[in-house]
Amino acid sequence: MLRALNVIWVALMVAGAVLTYAMKDRAGRAADHVMQLRSDIAREKEALTVLRAEWSVLDQPARLQGLVERYGSYLHLVSLDVRQLATVDEVPEKPVESPTAGIDGVITSGVAKPHAPTKSRTPATRQPGANP
Image (cartoon, rainbow, N blue to C red; front, side, top):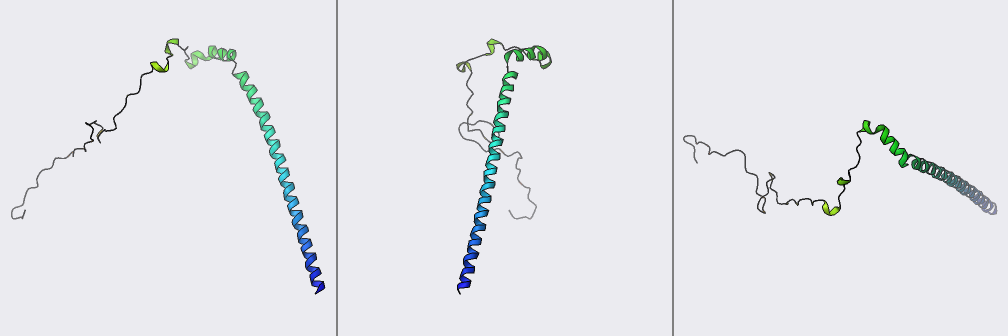
């Protein structure tokens, strides 16, 4: 009996050691993954910094003016006329559409009328000897 109990305790200790090793290995892999993610984030931030610097060079007004002068006729670019600018008060309001439009799109006097039938109905001719 004592021998069986010792075997059980040894088996539990081995299982605990294997479980502890597995948890430590999983934590180490997670830490490596976190370090890889931090490295990727740092690389992306550096790329963003380079792209922002490149954008500021490409967006300089003198460079853009040179491109406009060079390719303006090809792209049919025209200068902005100052008279084209307006304030919000000068913009006309959009006309309000009535929600009471009928089926055929005709606005009625407040009530939508049903669409008139397209075929005219003629009474059927009776056959001689048929009951009405």
